[in-house]
Amino acid sequence: MDEQEFVRTVAERTGLSRQEAGDLTWATLETLAHRLSPGEARDLITELPEGLAEAVRRGTTDRIERFGHHDSVRRVAERTMLKEEEADRGVRAVLVVLREAISEKEFDDLMSQLGTDFSQHLESAG
Image 1 (cartoon, helix red, strand yellow):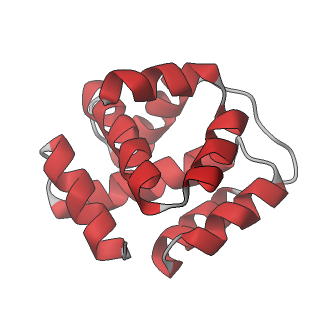
Image 2: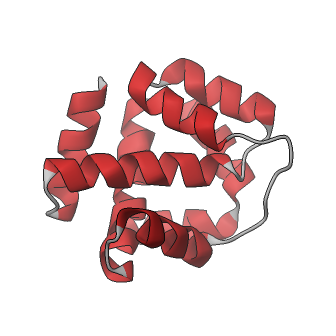
């Protein structure tokens, strides 16, 4: 899946414009990268198209942050100027599309680092 298709799919699933979906996707990936080990971030980067991989690169740090789904939604809402409800729907949509865009193994590795809070919200997204 290329970057345009990824963003288009997020836009369709959230009802946001493509510009908003692009900003949301970028903000979500960069925010979630704060939760990943540098090794996991590198693995994810290898499976993403370049534009989306850059969002993960920008969010990757040597110190793994600990925050849950709600805090990630708040951070994404602040960065994108979306309402929290829109950001919540968007973060879930990005995770669902990510599950479709990368290998099952890589997605499982990603979710294991994000934790059960994210997994539970993903399950409710479908």
